[in-house]
Length: 522
Image (cartoon, rainbow, N blue to C red):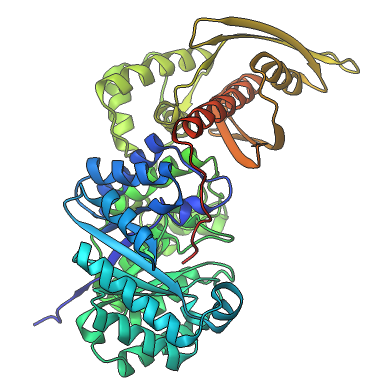
């Protein structure tokens, strides 16, 4: 009889830890789209945010709890009653809910951040867990910076919170400091020395500062962890978190070694990865494992020859396993609705009738400009439609002129939601610079441009270009993106999206009157 297999829970913290990555903040509608995609992906737990951080964070967590079915909906809290109560009220509508409390335990954090003695740390952790258990049956505790905490003290803390009622204990490598052998030994030590540890689920949460977040998470699983905390595309503080798609495909591809299951529908990995990259404006590196453009590409003659003989010569997994199609050239201007809908479904996206109608119109317009449409073009249309965010300003017209050795000129005509139309002309070092300055003058929003990137989303001379714009306004970073066969147009639309985000954020802040508190790093 085959040995019974264990299940590893996938705890996704894209909306909490991932969003803390600079430039990766999301508005509430975007967080809901990500949460729904995570539910479709099959994650077990969605850490939807840190409700005590701001009124907006509380509202986003509450919206996820109300509208997303399936996974456990979790919120993060410091070990104090106010934070814990905020989580409880935010996640209350969820059918399955969890309160996640944390407190730093390492000597360096005790001395320089908390100014607390060991006894005070244990007392505060126990009080936090006990209060959380009064409000919720499912309580997780994280000793922040566990990998740099003295083993004897970490053992005391973990034993105390288990006795206080924690149902999951997470062991975080908060600063990405540990290495696989050392981390595995830590888990083995806890399992051997902590009373009651067999009654709870051990979890692992790793950061990627030394590039070992996935390796450390996997070695923790081998040593007894049965929950992995991770993010889509590995986004997160500093160098990021353990990458969900990488750790899940490692468990699946090396199934004979790990002998462990997850509930992840791996065919949703690629579309979910692409959707998040589009929302946060962070392109996926070409050589990114699992979901990068080159992950299943073969250029070497030796590799191509082997692939023609059998795919397993140079592929340890199939592109279809992660939701990536092999075909590239797909449609043209004579293709109809049925063909486009089928292709969108093959690429792993689901659109309702309204969204599809909008994409089809954009598809026909693009097909008139391009001779051949590739998968990348179709993905860009779908993601752009999902990513489009309403705002007060829209672009009615754009005119530019540029001659070598002369100053470029641009004229933009904008329409505001209140009915106003404004036309503004400006000059600049190039047509993009001139167009962005014209928008600033027309809207009255002055920003500092920090980064401007352009990349191709498909192949061919008439490929679409995606423009990514990052600006700073009132000490906050905003980003926008847009896709077009005209680079100046895509840059202009991306910049206008930034202006709309700023105005929407300013309106929200004026309505709530709240400021964001410092985020937590677990």
